[in-house]
Structures are given as structure tokens and as C-alpha cells.
Amino acid sequence: MFILVVDSNNSSLRFADIGKAIGRSRQTAGSCIADLRAATQLGLGIKITRMHRLGISQDRITKRLEQVRETIRNHLAKTPELANPSNADLSKGFTVALEAEKHGWAEPLVWSIAFESKSDLDRFKALNWGLRTWVKFPEACFV
Image 1 (cartoon, helix red, strand yellow):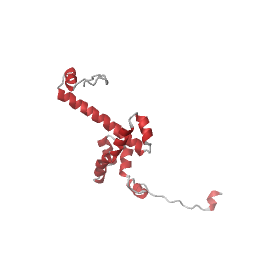
Image 2: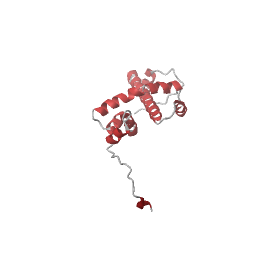
Image 3: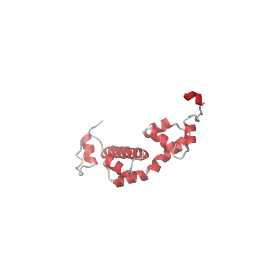
Image 4: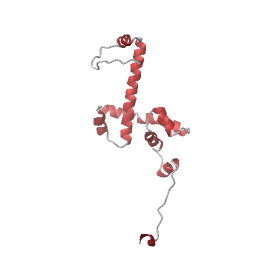
């Protein structure tokens, strides 16, 4: 593993320079940086999705994550895309725990995606929760 400290204000640094500094090819350096960028963006997207599903407003998400409002809006526009692969796998019988591990998401996020269009009764059935109705107790119980 290589650790390279780069000044974020130095935009003149090229992949070839980074590759030379770590003893790797330009392509390898470029590939690693692309992976890091993708992981950072994916992490940001998951944070935005989680906060949005919790009912936090876009303005508050913007302030909390210190991002531009357009960035938040763009990620929220992609939210259905993020959920579709998970929905497809869940409908094929994959477990929520497996889906959460596969995508690196928290299980409650996968559950919220799975239950998005279901009624309360369907949610209870999926969780194997029984329904209990209120029983009217005789007046003698409260004396």
C-alpha cells in the first residue's frame, strides 16, 4: 500500500507524476485515483440517500455535508437508480443482509427500499410479525 500526500490545490499534478512518485505506471495511478473518486462519490451518495430517507430536507443535507445544493439534487435524482439493483435482487429471493453487505449499505436502508411500496400489513408479513388486536378487558380488571 502506498500513501501519497498531495496538495489538493495543485491541479498541475499528472497521473504520470503520481505514478513515478509511487513507482507504478501512469495507468495504474490513474486507475487507483479513479477508484478513490468513485468510492468517495458513492459514499457521498449513500449519505445523501440515508439522510433523505430519514426525512431530512435538502437544505439541511447541504449544510450538514457541506456540499453545493446542485450536488445534493443530482444525487437524489439518481436515488431510484441506486435502489433498482437492490429491488431486483430482493425480488429474486436474496436476503436483506446479503444485499446490505453487497452494496455496503446499512440494513435499515435496504429494508426501507424493500418496503417502499408495501402496505403496513405486507410489511408485517415480510418481517414475520404477527398482528395483535386490542382486546377489551372486563371492567373488573381495572378495579
